[in-house]
Image 1 (cartoon, one colour):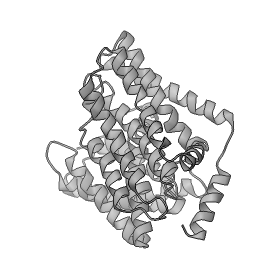
Image 2 (cartoon, one colour):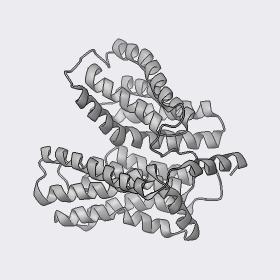
Image 3 (cartoon, helix red, strand yellow):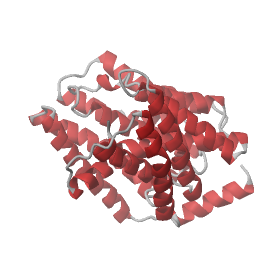
Length: 343
């Protein structure tokens, strides 16, 4: 690790807020979001004990999700992992407990679904245990670990292992599990610098959000209208609904996708290639290609606009060195699209 990178990381950690009240705040957020998820679960048909178990499992997974971004928990994990290398496997197995609890509470605990979830968590962990932790730059094993986390999540290959009916929150639970795994494995265990999983915009963050959103809208909306991917189709939505939708997209879609494509992919490419521009371009193209499977058939228009959007998400990430700004731009784009421009 270079002196400059190491010093920047130490300064960032020194500025990280600490204190028990932040853990209480993370707990409160986890409970609040799980209550909101419970309302959606009721709409999907969950009732009684199954609904309560799903809400508790979601809260248990959301607690590290929020705590890792609000406190110095990742540093605490890192100290333990440095002292006891294979303790990371215990941390990964602990993340499977909400699944076991939910499956047991719904009388759906069986070996095959559990093994699918367990392999999803343990394969990337094993790859990182085998990787060279002394190298500051991520290598082939780290890239394979990213793929092992991303492909099953993006193509929804594992979410049906969660003992919930379709539309009742299995994808949300699996997304939060994937985020917890990614932060613990890549930030706390592997120690990859400048991933940016922290819930604050930082200096210049608001400007980065607004400027990148406005410039992308000025370029992307005309392209989308010209290609027929977008159409002026405003819906009557109250400001409250818009805010709620923005927050849901921010935490369920924006932050997880930006963790992957900016915090891991773009950041890793920049460390490997040494070129911020090349890393931005490659990560944006990969982000666009990842959207080809969003829909009944691949849509090149979607991939094109997603690649273009990825440039502005990546610029917000480069400016702030955190994920909250690109995730906010991402959530603004998706909110405006869904509310006014969906063809």
